[in-house]
Image 1 (tube, rainbow, N blue to C red):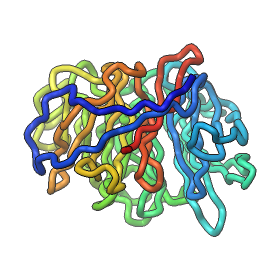
Image 2: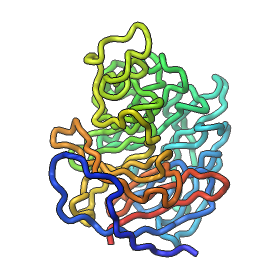
Image 3: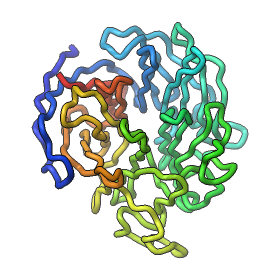
Image 4: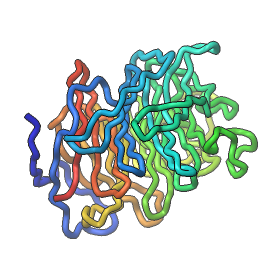
Length: 367
């Protein structure tokens, strides 16, 4: 039976040096909101409070709200999805425009051009149905690995997408391709006039497998969360036109050059944080903005798969550094995939990635 668990958080990792010594930390309560899911990859909330959950095998579940008693309004099966390994139905975001709620979904689909990742846009009805499918971004190769695809509707009213290199590392340095990039398009899929490369959706390049994307609630700066190879998971402050180094270098220029033809490490942007000589399998990331989070307000929370925990980071004053602060819920629910805030910033929702129809959606919020 699902129970409300009051979780007094004891830091499971040593607090590292960084700005702003902690004042009052919140006391957190947790609750399992949904269970029996199959690889729930991401969560999004509508302005009206509906909760949408993607399941990698090919579905989007729409609930009336994010409570345990919320009603399942509908299940949308995305057509032509080819779900293998990391591929399937992944990132999701919502936007309100002219009185209508729209949903953006990244899906790996078998189409005429082959196995491709596409960002689809739907209209969400009041009853919870997804209608009027439109492909607003395509041309990204899909693969069973390095297939990360996070989607966010940014504060600039643009659609932002992270895209892994699909196990073709060289594509991350090919500006004409869309894999290994952070992409940015208008609501309808057109290229924004202020993108750094004229006529291209590419906003930044040199990424391996970015599975998380979040905007700082005060500065609106975008940050990506990325899987490293066997070392150096990364958090990156995403800047227009910047090159983040993969597959030439990982971390802070300490591993590389990995292949011939690469420039010096100083030619690439350094991460805000890297895991160093091991990996955590960092996945989804989210900022929390409510004052209820007390000294943790506006901090970044990152879900990990390998370490099966939630990591807390404080962004430095200049925005260029992320300081690791603590480890939460170590091993409590198994592998954690998504971390998504509610629109108020009051609560944080997590998904597990354990398989076997046992996966859950978990709510975390200050008491």
